[in-house]
Image (cartoon, rainbow, N blue to C red; front, side):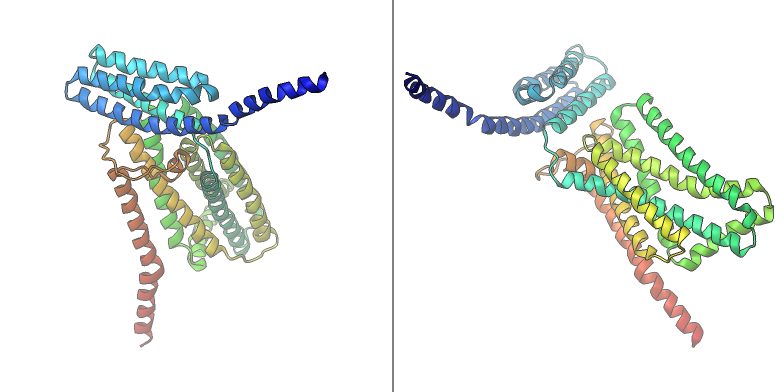
Length: 410
């Protein structure tokens, strides 16, 4: 009897398995369609804003409603399984945009509503997208490069300062110099906390805040990288720091050496805070990889610092510094692309799309590669400037120096 019941249940079990088998494929199809519908909703929201600017409120309202009903509703199907709260948040954002367009609110209000909807669509895109391998690797690499390059420069500055103290028979000032270095490390931590708080409470839109932070980071990255490259020669670096030590010795005060240690390290710390804050804005969802990159860089810096300061080893620092500066210049290109995209999302800069496939959202955020003419132009211009600067520093300038020496010898 038991065997008969088992045989009778077999067709039922087979039917259940057959029904269950297509489920993963169906879920995958829903995700793919969801991501495609996000793009369509984003396009219609932009067209709705353009129509509202021309005064065609009725058409703007229809386009905004179509963006939600004809496209975003299909995104809600896979999104409800992952983050139902995000579904409700975006429903309210779309509703506010439609209502303000219908009621004829001011252009600034509708522009702000559009920026909020675009930010919500980006959050949904991140929620549905897979991270893959490339995006975590890029996040890890950028994070490692920021801390390692800034840290190596700080270690070199400390080594040169200590060497200059020994050469000037000023061993008694090592303690205030060290206290200045420790104070700079503490001030860097405080600066990071204050910067995080300011970004959280700043009375600016998310897009404008992202653009300002990214542009500031770009300017500092370019200046820092070219300043470092111009002082890659050991002799120049030694002369630069010895002049600062000589000025402190001439002052002959503890405060002068404390300030020397503080300023030498805090400048690197301030730059590190700025770069990490900018990276955090565009690496949402990849925070683990950013932290892992920073931890790995800290461990590597510990080894470099021990070898230089404790063992007195001469390491191949020039390749490390050049490599770090190159990665940071690429990071500045990514920040520039994201700054343009943020200004476009806030409707402060025109956007002319380029017809090519968009990168996955996490990789696009990290590289700043968004398919618009304006963003790609700015990134291409920056790359051209960097290539020209590298040719000048590593090819043309040394050639001129050699010709000058040959002429002097002749």
